[in-house]
Length: 281
Image (tube, rainbow, N blue to C red; front, side, top):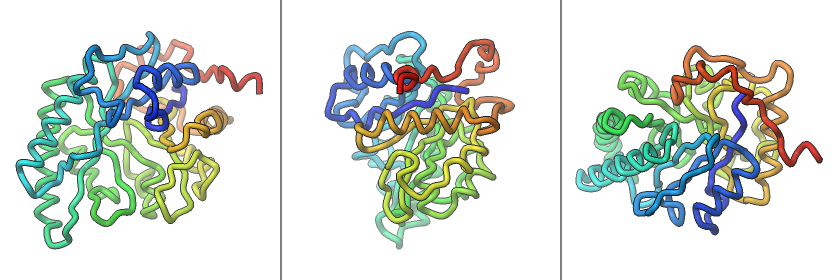
């Protein structure tokens, strides 16, 4: 099983280097949320995590909309994603997670969705140019958001794009079982909620039955804890570790890892969770 990881989001009040140092003492799987103080686009030099760190990048979410009906905004958003993917490739990241965009006006939903499809075509080009896997994330319960149910999955797979399953978002929309049965995510964002708001709580603090959910998740793809409060990081990672290593819990194998196609060549390595500080608890 790959070691459960965590997003740098809960360490936004620290530098990116400081956030990586904090998380690398807890896990070898880290996702950089490349926004705010952790933006990697203008950063020189780029932080280089220690050898053995499995790194992914979450593209910026502010000031960006891949589904904008204004072509200038959509094109600018695509170029930002292209820049992030290039930086992520230079850092040795496995994949980049991207939000699919939104439409604030119901009257323009069809036009916005068409804009999103054009952006998906652009993401294919970015994948080819940078060699970086792009994973589109399913969104929460805001009606303006695209990709709130599995309906977009054929558009992604048909283009050779991956997707990141956000468990909390799928639960809010009442489609978690649909995603688990229909999709093959290359990564998973894990956080809990009580079915009303996108709370980003650690697992076990909301209403999601993670014991049941983890039966249907591959152990070979990165499980990224995406929570708001850094005080809950240790608790969240311990919960994921316990759930992921329980007898019979979680899929033990997949035919191919969409984010890391060479994973089968590394299966001889010890990738079990060391639990580090948790062993003394």
